Length: 325
Image 1 (cartoon, rainbow, N blue to C red):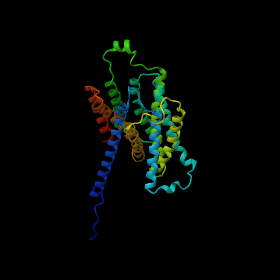
Image 2 (cartoon, one colour):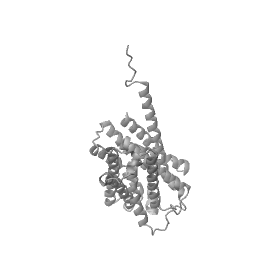
Image 3 (cartoon, rainbow, N blue to C red):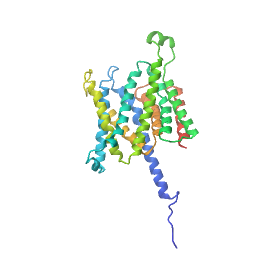
Image 4 (cartoon, rainbow, N blue to C red):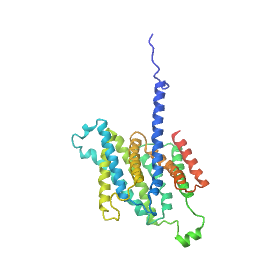
């Protein structure tokens, strides 16, 4: 009598592997949300007399350099150094320059936009990058989303708007007008810039996902190519501003190094998500991190939460259920 082992869909080994995979993705998601959410409160903790004591461009460069060194170390430890024995072809490496250029463009757009709108308007309108990412994800990668998934992403975008609105101080409009000038304002040029910013943000994420998935290369090697260009572009930007008031490592403290380590880890985690998962997961990470940001600001910085805070929490939970069910 021939006994056929239980290897069907409900076999214990298969179920165990599925649960292990879910736990791994859950831990990865939780770490990314925690790191994203803690970024702004940690920067606030570094401030001296209301000013950031370090050079932001040097901090970005150090983050890119950390990601590059970690990618190189991972490649060496996994025995992938044979890929570096000969110079790679330009056709293979050139696509990895595009994300670095797009992210550098967006970093400059964020600074430029502040002259044409107030920070609160920027926070509200920047949620449009959820829509731009979803549209580009569907059209450029050929991923067809179900109507309920489009509804989930709409809820996610609205949750970001409501969360930003709940943090605005609109109680005394006359005081704001007379003492501080108009609090909420945006020009037509500012609206155009924020639309460009949201499009470029979505394009960078979708393009990076396409490049990582289209080439059958180890992720550590792909990260190496990505961050070589990241270091080069941000290095040029940092040293172009060498005449700034702060020197390269001036004002660095333990908290600043923690920010660098966290952001470097998050960049590498995001590569794993884009390589083996979906760019839509990135949107849920960013949305959930807003809630972590608010909670940490409440605990660490003593900022007050309003009852309206529960609305975006519920909307993000519902959006996640609708999208992944």
